[in-house]
Amino acid sequence: MEQATFTARYGPWALIAGASEGTGAAFARQLADKGMNLILVARRARPLEALADELRARVECVTASIDLAAVDAAEQLQGIAAGREVGLLILNAGADPNGAMFLDVEVASWDALVARNVVTVTRALHAFAAPMRARERGGLMVVGSGACYGGLPGIGVYAATKAFDLVLCEALWAELEPHGVDVLSFVLGRTDTPAHRELMAARGIAVPDGLADADEVARLGLARLPFGPVCNWGEADDVAGMSASSAAQRRERIRRISATFSTDAKG
Ligand SMILES: NC(=O)c1ccc[n+]([C@@H]2O[C@H](COP(=O)([O-])OP(=O)(O)OC[C@H]3O[C@@H](n4cnc5c(N)ncnc54)[C@H](OP(=O)(O)O)[C@@H]3O)[C@@H](O)[C@H]2O)c1
Image 1: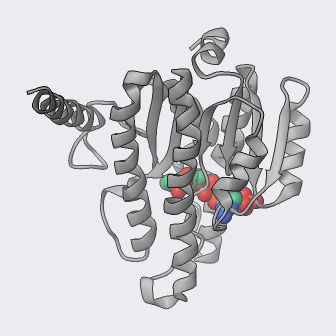
Image 2 (image 1 turned 30 degrees about the vertical axis):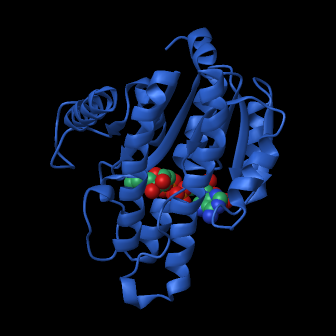
């Protein structure tokens, strides 16, 4: 999408939660290239500020050090965004730093994962989608994982939170499409990010060949934003590899059932 078309479609500001490195930083750089002003959020202030300094020559940048697992994280996001028209929300933070079987860490670790990936995602989507619907333009992207398509040992809670995000995005896509708001669950495979490398190092696993490149991932995500509700990294729209159904089949299923509901409601 051309730069002018992109800012016209989404508006002047983008908020990226989990912006300081990896795919989050790649989204930030590419959105700056498209002329979008940026609100950059993560826990560590220093890498955020370094990124903002790099991008300020091109666009306005605001940073905020927020723990997205905090009970009031969504309110903090709204606070930093106050007075700015946020037309694009990218919820990128979401990896599981535990790398453990369900019973091998304290339940508080799972609480934090659910708080960040489920509670804050829900509240932030609710808070930021409402003004987008009123303006009849905007975009919402939740960065997901192929883990969303089924439970596996060692990633049970992570996979369950990603399944929640996928299903919520599908519903929001159907609800908000008539109001000009794009919604995408952007489902990643293994991607070369600092967080993923740290996790592999902690587990004593060598970095495999063929990890996806964060810049390429971000480019695809922004290109597919208008074609929700799902984009599976590395798969064409009509290919079902990660899941039992392709992105296109999932979209058609939602359209078919939604149409039945609206016919029933009219009848
Ligand atoms: N990398 C992969 O192989 C892979 C595979 C499938 C899906 N994904 C998905 O891709 C997304 C990005 O993954 P990633 O590997 O880059 O790791 P990540 O830890 O989810 O993301 C890194 C970014 O999120 C921030 N962040 C993490 N936890 C946060 C919290 N509680 N509060 C605020 N900011 C937080 C980090 O900065 P701070 O540490 O400073 O907070 C950093 O900016 C995630 O949703 C993940 O599930 C990744």
